[in-house]
Image 1 (cartoon, helix red, strand yellow):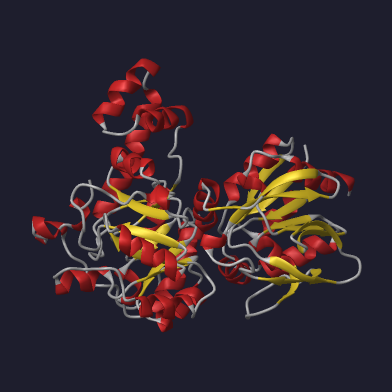
Image 2 (tube, rainbow over the protein chains, first blue to last red):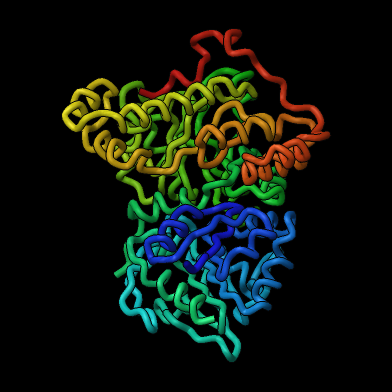
Length: 189
Length: 294
């Protein structure tokens, strides 16, 4: 069975594991870099990107995940995960993986009172109820990045080869289609 | 259509905080230290619980200047405390842009009968509990996150352990009951039947549960995580210790790798003086913060 890891340094890990398993793959908690050898794809979950980033540096995950990517293995980042995968962020100085040719803006939609749910139309997936929590957005992209969903003309989901990012949290809904899409990306490798 | 303040976005932020440490801070400088150490959120306060305990008098919501200063100094979520039942303090905190409101027993209660109707707000609330019944009462009032109370400002983990075990025992007990026994169980623990049934069916609380009140060391944090906490609040334990930045970072690491004794040993080394602890039996009954809330 296809094994997908979820980076478990901090954040909504359990929900991703549940979605991966419901979507027909095996979910594996990743706490140390050497555990990446055992999985074919990786999800970087939502949480606090500053916290996850610092812990990634502390435990040697930055180089390990860059190697994982270099081997062509797919990575999906939700919310904080999207920020960590971005080549750069608009403000602030924090550890990043800098793998995907996008610029992310943290807390772009505002504080918690501005957190919201909205209906999106995702390319290749269709209508989707999306949950945005203190969410970032994609400020700009380079060539080669395919925008998969927009909200109010703001880019909130994109793919570049084996990298997938969303500013919202499919793991907080009962909808498995985004996880199925990612599992397909992993199986196609 | 856009919907804000839904239960899903309220409980969702708590889900994002899981596995993390929320630290009490009183100044923008402390907030930066907490963020740099890897805190997932900070609790903006005028005084930490140990100082509230020492100074006595009525403890209220912090001055908005303190809260705004902290909001402007960090990019992580900022929580703030309102007195139990003081819904106007909560309205003010919501207007200030606090990301979570802690309706907290650390402050002097404003209402000895009613908690805040938390459904009235777009901002989510976290509330303390000592047992399952108290947790479910708070959830029925709209709390989107729960924390066990412990005894704040003591640096003594014993009450936090008692409360976490009590909540977990309550959940195991409900899980083992037969359907027809749930009605009497709801009456026993003074909680709504629908929530009692939900816990029976799912074997867990419907919202995230952190541990609070008494965490002073990385080992304390890991103990609470091993007992089933989904994350940690540290109040006085960091900024009442000798080397706050180092201790804060160590507690963050201990919360991530809470089952890894080798790592716990490593991060527990050379942290300087911990906060001075208080033995629970030395606290006069009237000064026990955990008794506040109903």
